[in-house]
Length: 304
Length: 90
Image 1 (tube, rainbow over the protein chains, first blue to last red):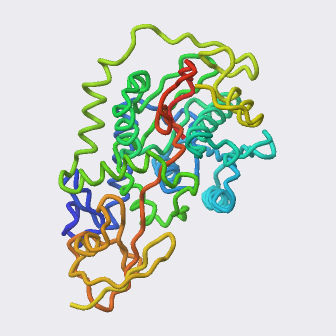
Image 2 (cartoon, each protein chain N blue to C red; image 1 turned 90 degrees about the horizontal axis):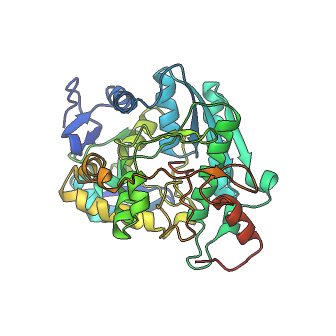
Image 3 (cartoon, each protein chain N blue to C red; image 1 turned 30 degrees about the horizontal axis):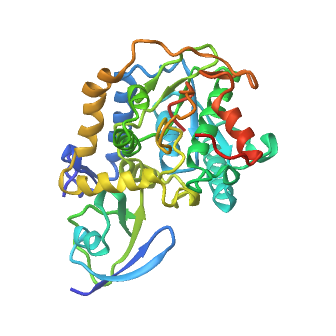
């Protein structure tokens, strides 16, 4: 297999594009894809201050690296989730990346600042804290972005993440979530930061290859809390289909965004108000984060 | 064709597998092409690269999951009626 740019032996094949690249040409192709996505969706400009949500994994660090190389103003934000040795090592990788490139990395420490860790947030039925972890991340990334005046929060969600989320939401007919899934979530409240996903058209394998070629030291292993998570089962199913139908995940996601989503968008704007406890934007009297923390820490039964 | 020595990350599990090329190797290990990267001497290999008996191969997983901070990605429903505007990524 040869690089489509320079005809040297290829290192990275992108089957859905029927393309392959050598290690020399691949990083430019990856960054060009990121730039096109940013431009196509007018995600942000070089005048914006962008807060990149950092986990220490390949996607967030590859995104931060690519944005830096593309000339954007970026700082990072890392949440210390308290997931044992995994969190210790992912924090170290994130801090090392920031230090190596002279970048600022904001941090929130759940245990020290808020009195709990993610393993304490396990769902009583499933025994997993993944949904709670998502709520925690959304809450703190937004709060830090608004408090510190960032124009936009960029996350490392990739094609596989988005396709798996879409797959799960279709399986359960989560029409409210389906109507809002997309690469840009506009701010609809002064305390709600704009959210963007510049990697959503790039596969997980693409960002891993970018990180390896650019010698980005990221945490390779999966979060131990995610073992058995539904999202991983959805990815496995989609990858099994992709094996014989290259491009299927891309067609599934992009086809939905172009064709399916508009049928699910509601006409009525969601009424947003301030949480009675913390003041953050919410659609309920008390936000999901405050309710969850109070409920789990008091070990009350989960209300359904 | 002899066995290729394979180290599978992140646990660094070692296997010896008979495989003519990278595609055969992944099939023999029961792994999806989109979920792994195959590396020999710090160089990423495409699926058509032929393997030799003395090759030291590493297989890196690329899949991540769990609390992805996406609406609906890890939960079955928003049963409390709060559709949380704080959606859209981690």
